[in-house]
Length: 444
Ligand code: SF4
Ligand code: SF4
Image (cartoon, rainbow, N blue to C red; front, side, top):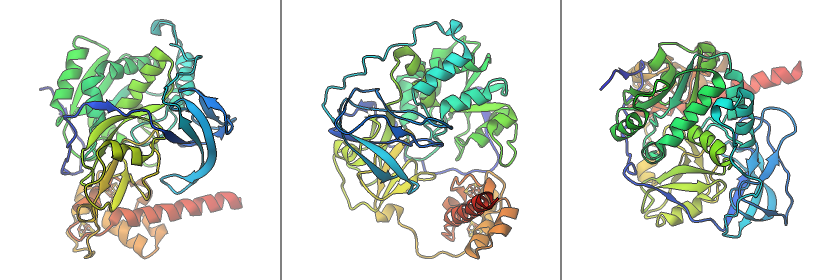
């Protein structure tokens, strides 16, 4: 095997990749979806449909007049039955369009392939296709993809496709690489054209040898696409670690990969970009892993956006024990949800349901000063001090020690023998500091 790339720090987590051998199944069209009009970072969209309207699959239902935003489309055909406010994973209120499905999956008649050869397509046209398709980062970051491409044009010299999927349990990208490798590769070619670059690097951890071989087979002889093998280590999928491992470039605190000449796109985002060109269908569905010790038959599913978790769990045979924690995303960086009616969004890579015995917080919580959190922090921070400053509400001292550079990967908490909830304390400190900065801005 060729060179294996890695970064400093990090940890080896128990993988629990229970679904890696399971093909992606298409979830039958749900009876009802609830589609939030903000599934991205930026300005929330406003509904452009009304209660009682018939909608097609792929029809625009949410738009914003100004600012950084991401369009929202109907994920099934049917009738708009309600427009309401519901709270997202960050507990923010978001306008949400409820569609009662007709089971027909009728696509919007205006949807058609882009129709021009890639070699005759300009970067501006690519940005516009991606914008119209409502694509945002599908690895969890949810940044509008058209804006990321646009701001990277002329600024980066490395295009990195993040196929690491380092979180435990999640295997949806792994399956995508095995089952739809050409979608990812063709998406990378579209991005190369947009960015005016000549090489895209697909980065895969070495615990997915079958996916590496599949991509190598499909890219054999290509001077434009190379497969890079990454050492399996958490959080290899964090873009800062990926950029460092591959290029040796460090992203300065508070800056983006583009400031180090790199841009990183998630594997499924890449595939969806290609499909927007090939079919014209916007982002209305995504692959997710449904797993956790409470789920009877864990699966990888292709799911319309807005599908309630409840429908996924039912399709997976229901629950086998009392649920204690529902997580949107991976167990390390995902967000806990409190209801089975929460909808799948563009950033939902997994829905995990755990029992208390699996995911419960241990009682004893005391630092034994072992230093493991410091040794493993991939951002080279001092997590133990950050947590102690946060506990004492000394947020300015936490800021001086770099708390805002924490990527909330959870490596410190995972390794802590004292069961100190380090990341939770760090999140509190970061929220307090952000609130303080916003207050200062408002007062000016
Ligand atoms: S890993 Fe936990 S116990 Fe060890 S120094 Fe850090 S906070 Fe303390
Ligand atoms: S301090 Fe932040 S970046 Fe460092 S290990 Fe903990 S969560 Fe990860």
